[in-house]
Length: 534
Image 1 (cartoon, rainbow, N blue to C red):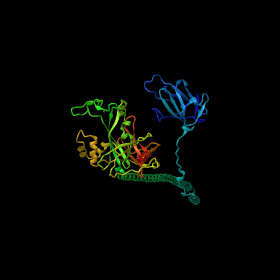
Image 2 (tube, rainbow, N blue to C red):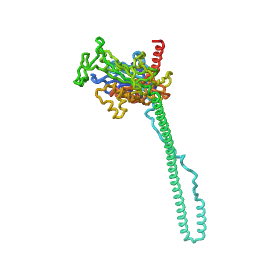
Image 3 (cartoon, helix red, strand yellow):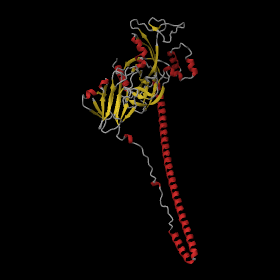
Image 4 (cartoon, helix red, strand yellow):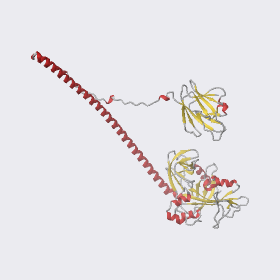
């Protein structure tokens, strides 16, 4: 089957790899025939997976005709070719299909799938060049007066005639020679004067041009300097405004952002027994090796428990919003899913909330889990007489734009992050006991009023229907934190970071939040149920 690509009389075209190891690379071709495939020597060559036998195949060829480019399909290669998502065999069986510039070709078989972008180039693509000229005629100066030799010539002629009649004939020859010499001297003098004037005029023109060029460069440098000063001033004002905004948010709403801490274990449903460490040492601590700590139902060690931390924030009296994976950490934990695959059931044993400047920890109860696939959960607690600020929520859904500054509050790295923010002596005093549990350390931090959320600042990079991409730095433990806009209103719930598929490290500037509207709907549903007496 033949498929025509491009516009009439185009002599060159561009191919851009849209997938595979060469993704983003481009090639320009101007020859009559270009081969595409995995065979060695193909002009557009796709990488094959290692270990595959054979020398590869040619999937198609691009031929240049008088008026367009044609794609010749090699059906014997066994490769399916799609044009803008449609199989070429479904488009037409025998006729030529003429496509527009910018078509996407996809080649796939059992081994791989690759995409290419086809772009035609202008007919005069190879002849384009940059020409720079300077017009020197406008810089020349005029109006220099020149001394005309007419007066001197007449005077010399009259003087010569008088002398000729008065002097003897023997002296005429001498006089004629003297006159000729004088005339030559005068003419030479005039020539040299004019030559020097010409050279002076050229030097003056050159100096004028240099001066004008330097003046324009100085003006340009001055304009650039003013521009940079303005950009620096604007940036400084933006930074100052962001700092002031962050300080206001932390001061006014930081006390309403809580540290969530919990413990869960695994239970065998039939017997109700908890999973334990298999063996312990003389001190009663679990025994393990390079492969970890073995666990079993009939183990003699302590119960296998997992501690976790996260962030939440107050949205109504005694009500907080957070992520589902914060209060149910096994939901997205690979190890927990593997244990559950063996038939064990997760058992949430303790779930607490710690608010800044409050020594009392609050028992949390899970009330709602988002049924729309959002990673959002609603929990309640007995607030009592404690005064905790309720965070304002954006209910319009229009309070956020791309590029807008945002402030994120949370507890990245959990308790470890809080310990790193206290002085060394205090930290050593709090962890002085080797067997001190994470709950005991957290309670000691609360007793010392050292639980305070960390704020980070960034900007909104992208907004979709179910996701906010922002650059406010965070990490594990910051999930569930509120994302404020410049109006000091919560517009999102932080829930994830982007990690490199190769190293696993976080990619700076790519963190994700959920639009707060999903949390608002959950809160309103819960409040309606409470008013109905449920």
